[in-house]
Structures are given as C-alpha cells and as structure tokens.
Image 1 (cartoon, helix red, strand yellow):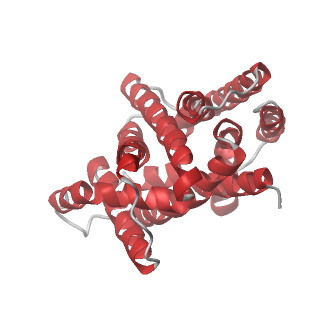
Image 2 (cartoon, helix red, strand yellow):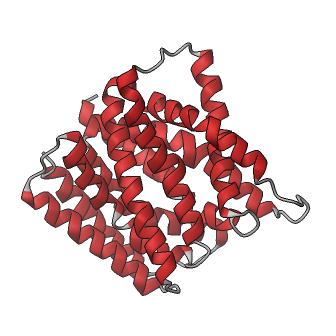
Length: 287
C-alpha cells in the first residue's frame, strides 16, 4: 500500500479515537479535580508504555532526542490535557469545539516551522475554510462562553499543535508509538508523585461516568490514539493529515447520537460534507 495512504488511514483511526476525548474529559472533571485527572491519565498511560517498551526491548532514544521528547510531553501529555480539563470547568464541550476547529491550522503552522513542510497557498485556503466551518457550526450548536475558558482552550490548542508537529517529526526516525511512549515515560517521575499527592479525599463520591472518562482518556486518548496519529502524521505529512481533525467534532457528535440517542439534524450532515471537501482540497495542495 502507498506510504501516503497508510498515513491517512492511521491518521483517520487516531482522529476517531480522539473524538471521544473531550466528552470523556467533561465526564471525568465532574468528580475529579483537573490537576488529578491530568497527572492520573499521564501516570496510568506512562506505566503501560513503560511495560510495553521493556517487554519489546526498545532501544533508548539518543540524547539529541530528549529535548524534542520533552516538548512533546509538555504539549500533549501535560499542556493540552490540563488546560482543557481546566477550560471545561468554565465552558461546555460544545463550545470547546470552536477551538478544536483551530487545531489543524495550528498543527500545520508548526509543521512548517518544525517539520520543514511547505504546503501550497491553496492548502491554507482550504484549511482556513474548514476551520471556519467547524467553528461556525460549534457556535450554531450553542454553548456558554467564558473569557477564562476561551483563553485556556486557545493555549491548549497552541501547545497541542506544537506537540503534534514535534512528535510527528520524531516519529519519522523513532516510530509513532515509541515517541508517545518515551514522552510518557519521561513525564512519569513528575506525574506519579503529583498523582499520589492529589488523590481524592473520598472515592465514594466518584461516579461511574467519571471512572469511565478517566479510563478512556488514560488508555485511548493518551496512548493508543497517539500510536496511530503520530504514524499517520509522519507518513502522510503533518500539515495534510492534520486536517483530518476538522472531522473530529462531527464524529464526536455522531458518537453521542449513537450511544446517547441525541438527534443529528441536517445542518450537521451538510457541514460535515463541506468539511470533507475542505479536507480533500487541503490534501491535494499539501505538498
């Protein structure tokens, strides 16, 4: 199979897994403190990653890779999870979709700065149109606004875009699952003590939904999703495959409709079709 096609397939699977992240985080912060949720999901995923690296006897990264791995950890292991968890205490998950629509643009921009990619001018047109469609749809869906929540979400998107681009650049040499695994392991000496120091005072008050949310963001959002996502960005191109995240909010809403019985109206179908066209256009002019 063509290298680019493999990249897009992996990127699509990663995006599909990430589509449940914000709803799961929203469920988890209902009972868990944002700081505990952040360090707990990182610690759980890091312990699993460490076991995987040891079992497969993966060679340690070179010294020159340590700083980029710290950047990855700061962006996707600590920065994005913590800032979104804090933001979701001020805004609804629907409102946060406005900012998820900006993530592909942030990833593409850092892909240019850090990955050496040079998309054609038409790429930025399609990418920008797709972002505006997602943001407009999210605003149309409603949701409360908050200056603090918006600022936290914007910072989260910038850090996440940097973490995506840096991780994809490293994945070309180390491999996608190895990059996120080593980034998690590097963060473990900080995350694990913080988790132990921020344990909830009473476990009885933690509901089932919060536990499910913690489990999802720890296993899927923090580890498995990145295994596919970084491989996809590395093979298909950071700027190009990153546009798949324009579809993430719609898959999240579809998931909610399937599992929770929420109504999916014609505006969602229409906007999804337009966004798919933008992704296709961005893919064509990405290189």
